[in-house]
Image 1 (cartoon, rainbow, N blue to C red):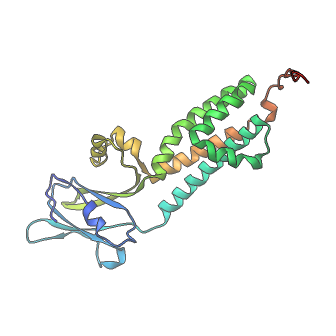
Image 2 (image 1 turned 90 degrees about the vertical axis):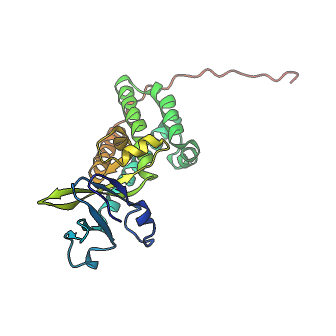
Length: 251
């Protein structure tokens, strides 16, 4: 496969035919080098003696595309999942507080409600019972969690994507690697923007670099600390409820 100087070529078909232990689900190639290139997928760094491009008789450069096999991206994803789980546990704690329930009983409610139901239940049940400062804090936290839930879903249901941007380096094409957690939206126009290599709103919405996932994990940790600061001391006294006596007719 030879890619000319101006084309943007997807590697999806080539990667699909590779072994099931391929480190990335898909590899995308964007040629900005000004040279014709002939990409060659390499399963591992140790499989070739050199990573340098080779000039072919047809004038194109053969470029080995080497997929990173390190565990860093998996560790970063795992930390993100763990931080999100901690947030869900805080939601369960505050729901138990608002209902006066045993925290051990909360998994039944949490599993039945789902993410949106949990947020709605917590806002409806606990917000009216909180003092003004705590109520304002909870409202801001829930707005942030709502925005992060969409990002979390895209990260969890996405896949590992390696984007290789070929640029000119001292007169020869050179690969630059970018690792992403990518989610493909239903909208065709948005999917095309993902493959452009340019910073678009679609790429911001659906592609997550390792550094961005780390930043989101840090934000999750900050929200956890804000959540944990809301305790029973922040609730208003429970209102007295009137009890009606019901007399059976004919009793």
